[in-house]
Length: 112
Ligand code: AMP
Ligand code: ZN
Image 1 (cartoon, rainbow, N blue to C red):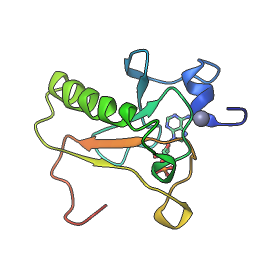
Image 2 (image 1 turned 60 degrees about the horizontal axis):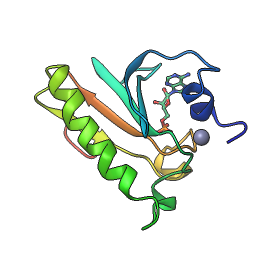
Image 3 (image 1 turned 90 degrees about the horizontal axis):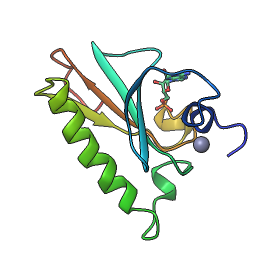
């Protein structure tokens, strides 16, 4: 999608620090980490956020969670948090579906 930061990162038009890639998804370290390990996992096909997930495109979300399970093991993360902000009031700033994966320290209690 034009003018989407994460589509540009997936296309290699904007540099990123890659964690993992396959035909369906791309994972890269967050530019402003909120934990010692903080990366994002995004579908390669543009979906604007959780509110746009439907029966037709939901399979990629299951795939992303299997990737999170695999990559966190490879990184040695026993504990981690997975977060997806949906909508401006929830703190979404990039409108391409992404799952934050945060770990590497004892995380603060609460939802975020
Ligand atoms: P959200 O605020 O939930 O939409 O998450 C967007 C995330 O993208 C934030 O944590 C930003 O730090 C991160 N971010 C923005 N630009 C980049 C970039 N060029 N490379 C990596 N992460 C980025
Ligand atoms: Zn996009």
